[in-house]
Length: 327
Image (cartoon, rainbow, N blue to C red):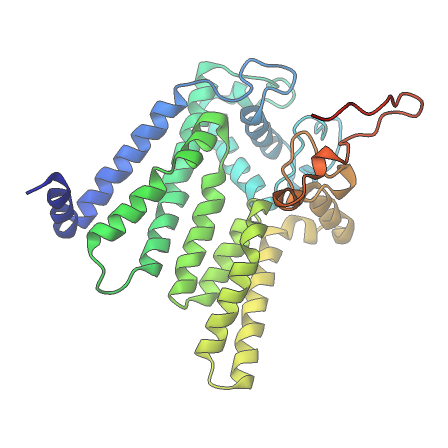
């Protein structure tokens, strides 16, 4: 019997054990990558995405929610100002509260800028791994479960799940460079699995949550829109029933978004507060390309490289020189 046949037989008989071993291997891989320096380490003044995530934990734990997206003495938006949707802020708040109990000096308001002590690095690395284990791993399992055929061998499911868990780009970006993309992708993958199984309302909550964790999920919005719409049509037995299902789904989406925007919606001036959050998430007034934000304009770059023709910042009047020659 070949090694492949042996592994296939083991997966078919012990699927749960194979997944536990695979999860352990995925965690070990993340730990191995995390040993190396993160992007921007010991490189002032901005340091890198590690510092951005640390700073967001600092801000969200020290300031009330309505001030997270506002420029102030305690919250300089030019220094890694929060520019991801509210669920990222809540995620930062949760991790920051835990971090304040473990390494409080890492999240001291104003005094922790550029803090990179070994204890702080260990906590931040552990928080990224824990986020993957708690959100990304279950999300991928849900996606594979959703798209699996009833008569599919366990080997295929295990292989697909391990391919997601060991995905090199995600591991390198989240645990080398340092980000929390796994949370967004985990929510979106779980939503995809629910769409495949016809659970449109759960899928709507999950995808809206993924979108309001990281706006890059907008890339997937058309697919989810038509996928959920198709589920509504298939599950309806007439025009009225179909319209009702679409309406209920829309209400669920809006209710999910409202819950996540609640601190701003319930304030004394909800409209300006919400618009400020949206302004931070989609920096239209800050240029098509900003130093620290990969925004929706990236999609245009697939066919037309705007960055080659539109300067990120215009020089002051009188200082503009001749355009550099292009290769």
